[in-house]
Image 1 (cartoon, helix red, strand yellow):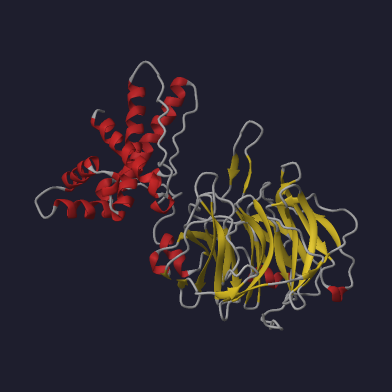
Image 2 (cartoon, one colour):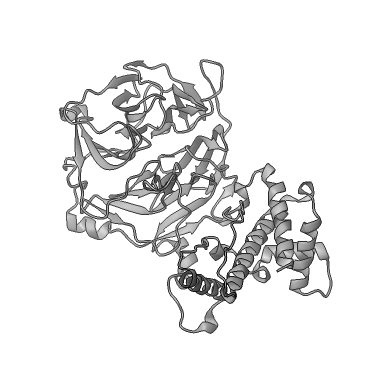
Length: 537
């Protein structure tokens, strides 16, 4: 561990937090930093080289200067992780460094964990706490990203208790502030400051009104204040409050104190497991989950973007032109220049491994969607609609008519229908089918049917990896077709019966990265039954 951490950036301003701004005039800042229209862009293989991290939630991703993003730990299917994956920003390369180091138990780096805190200062990433299984952790590590060496730190002073779901932020270039969390028995509302030079922890004594204890919140250092938003509180309620903590900068000689901020604008709903990412003079809040209301047993997951504008000092909804990623919590969002990079997360059922860019309208990769008309614009000429668009419209009309006839609300989620192309437009499916059949005079319909017959005869062990993605899409395509036919049958009959309650467990899976090996037999079994059902239709 180096004795001195060199400064790369400086945080601080003489302006009061009520303005959240720097030395430029408000008019200049409004023009330079206005909230532009943004686009969500699913990252493609051309964006990166190397191997991206495997799916996970509860991980951390921190910026090391402007050169790289370091992803650590997390949770995947009840398995806790402790791997390191790095995104080299300049070279657009993902890689896994070969780290060295030794801990008190002889291990190279931190043990497997999720829901820990990670803070970067210069070239160092500091890790504290988290959870592994049902055990809360209280160990403290630093990774030197110049030489990829882990060091377990023996700190002293007012040591914080073991905890998970805390939140932390850097103060300038030498200190870290950590707030709240869950120690396995109670929600916490304590504040600790670590001096990374002396490795001394100090519990901050705060007088006056305190925020309710919480976990799963965010904490972000802005100017000389720590902003804390949301989280799950004592007794379980999820909160939507915003607090500012002063007295963190010793040179200011301010008495530590909390102030609850009630800002105008379109404030986010109550949530925890969200992210708040600093982007210039805006703080971007994304995702998280909240309660589904007193009639629901389940949480509601979000995929909205809310901006805290430091110029106008109000909440704003970020204008986005296209469909956002799936709703999720316990993901990571990092700022790379004017772009944001979203990775991973969990939606109550599935763990994600997808990567998304959120970019302003003038970003070059925004052209991937702006080259074609936005999805929300409808053409008047019916001839311009694709076959899938016509089919979606027919299904929506059928649903509306069915609702009128039987007097109830019927809903088939079409979030996946938009992404399922017709089999004759599915290039990967057609290529796979052609390789199976070989050269010949068969039509595209005939080669697709030959592939379906092949899958109907296949065993789980005989399915190759390259077949899984086309198989999953064809499975979802058949479900869509079958449900549509059932709707038509109901509408043509004088007796409005039940559509049935078949459970298709893989219909909402977005890609094969969300499948496990033991899912393949079940997927294939359901696929074979769908082939039979459609054949008898």
